[in-house]
Length: 326
View 1 (spheres, helix red, strand yellow):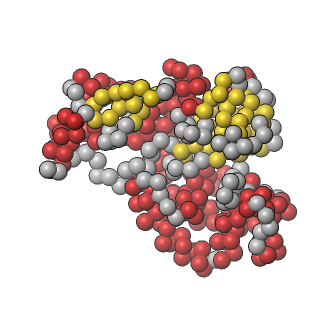
View 2: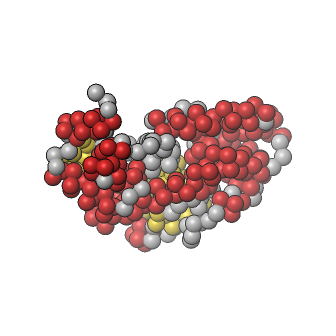
View 3: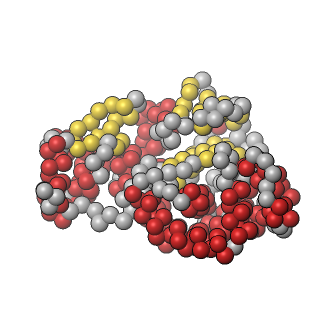
């Protein structure tokens, strides 16, 4: 497994940050894969994949560049620059890090990503980082920016929930939920960042950033020994992007916010996931869950360090009755 050794100062100074560029890179990776992990992602792909494929068909060099940059086990470094972390930057500022990458380094980085030689046209093409920045600008303007306000609210809610986890259970609790199966706190200053057999990397003196995205993809990046980033999927954020929400009858009975929590508990979810899914604050979600628990409409159980909630049979019957699903 790949893991980083985190110094005490680096851990104390680490922070969660929002990055429009990271969100756009995650969107590009999802478009490139052409498959969603849940209905929300599949709905988003249905809306944007045809236009993306038309653009790639019309620009074959761009298509070859994306295929090479998003390798089977690694991304080309110029595609995934590490955020500065001082403040949230607009996309237009962040993407300059891609555009200004050293062109001479692009082909060697692509060779690492693909694990071998890259196609001839890419070897002779001028300024591949500039071309990649242009692709990312198209993805941002056509597929991310129209919905950025909502996405940003979801990301903020996720950060709020994970910060609360940090306060209650320390870094082990906050980091174990970042990317189940890939990222977890190993103890003794060690953070597992992926499941690959890679040599450890020291983050003794650098700045450590955690960057949520609303797609089910993630990666790590670093800038020398100064900045390190773990980009992780925001739990459940796109699970129901186009949903009309709770049935009107259920909203009238329970209140729209509380009904929204109950509707989203068809499958087990943690409090932090519910915050991300609903866009409500942590305190509000906690109060709704207490009322639903007391009413016997949801139940809770432990799964490792997490507490998961899901609907009881009574809760499911109530949702179905309000939806007319009988």
